[in-house]
Length: 505
Image (cartoon, rainbow, N blue to C red; front, side, top):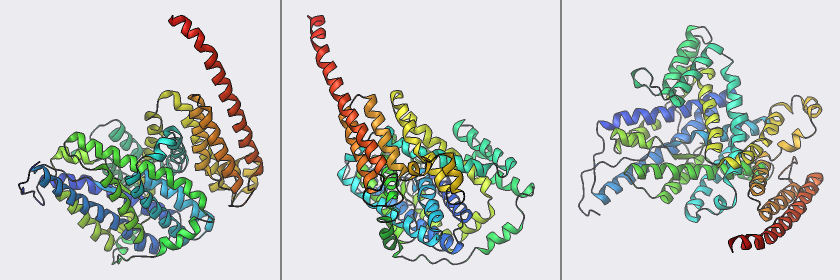
C-alpha cells in the first residue's frame, strides 16, 4: 500500500474512446425507454419531463461516485492506471421493469401517471433491497435455487421482451431484419462493424437511415424530434411514496417481480466488479452494490423508474486504458442531454423497428443465461419456471379485449398468469429439489405455494382470505405427496447401506 499521493489525471486521451462506448450504451437504453413508453401510450410530459430526467439523475450520481472511487483506489495503491467502473441503467433489468411493471400496470389501470408512480415505488424498493443485500449478503440467493429465479425471469424475457419486440421488428420487415442481422453478427458473431462503430449504435444508424430512405418514416419525424428540444427541469418528486400504497395493496403481486430482478441485478454487479478485479482494479463489491441501490433510489425520487448497475463494459474501458475522465464526462453529457431534451429529440427520430431488435437480443441473452449459468440437469427446472409467464402474457395482452376467447382457449390461463413470477419461482424450485431428491425442501415450497394461493398472491385477482381454494388444496396435496417421497427415499437409502458396507468389506 502506498502512502504517497499520486497525480491521477481528471481526463486523458484514452478516456475519449471509453466515453463514446459508455455513452452509446447508456443512450441506447434511454432511447429504448422513450420509444417503448411513447408507443405504449405514455404522454410526452411524463416520458420527457419526468422519466428521462430522473433516470439521468441516477446515471449522473453513479458515474461521479465511481470516478471518486477510482481516485480513492489510485491514491491507495499509488497507481495512475486505475479505471473507473462503467455505470448506467441495467438493460435486462430495464426491460423487466418496462414489460413486467410499467406496461402491465398501464394496461390494467388505463392511467399512465398511476403506472409511473407504481413503477417508481417498485424501483425505490428495488434500490433499497439492493442496499440491504449489500450488507446482509446472500440468504435469499442461497435458499431460492438459481434455476428457479433465472427461469422465471427468462419467462419475462421470452414473452414480453424477445417475443413482443420480435413482433415490433417485423412491423418494418426490411428495417427490422437488417437491424436484427447486424445485432446478431456484431454481438453474437463478434464481427466488427465499419469504422469499429459499436454494433448496437451501427444497427440504430442503419435502421434509421433505411426507414427514412424506404419511406417507412417521413421527414416530419425529424421536425417533431427537434420540437422536443427545450428545457426539462430536474426536480424531486413524492410520487414513489404515492405508488407504494398501491404496490402493497392492489399490485402486491409485483413484489414477485421486484425481488428476483433485484437479486439478479445485485449478482450482475458482483460479477462485473469481480471481472474488473481480475483485470487489475479491485473494488469493494458490497460498496458497489450499495452505490447501485442508492443510485436507483435517488433516480426514483427524481422520476426515473429504472434500476442501475455496474456494466461489464468496464473491462473494455480498462483495455482501452481509460481512467476516471470518461465516467465524469458521461455524467456531464447526460445531465445536459436530459435537461435540454436532446434524448427526446433523438428518440422521436429513431423508429421502433430500428430499436426493437436490440431488445430481442436482450431477451434471448437472458434466456441463454438462465441455461448457461446452471448445470444441464436443471434445464427442466428452468423450462418449468418460464412457463407461467406465457399465461401471464396472454392474460395481460388479450384478456381485457377478448376475455371470452382467452377463457375458451383454456380456463387455466388467467389464474396461472396471476402472480406468474411467484408461480414460476416456486414451480422451478420444486423441480430443482425433485431433481436433487430433496423432498423436504420441495414440501416447504409446496406449502408456501398453498399459503400464497390462500391469501391471493397467486392464482387470484386480489389479496383476500381463501382467494384460490382449489389451488390451495392442490398444493397441499402435492406437499403431502412429497413427504411420502421423502420417507420412501430415506428408507431405500437405509436399506442400501448394509449392501454397500458388504461391498467395501
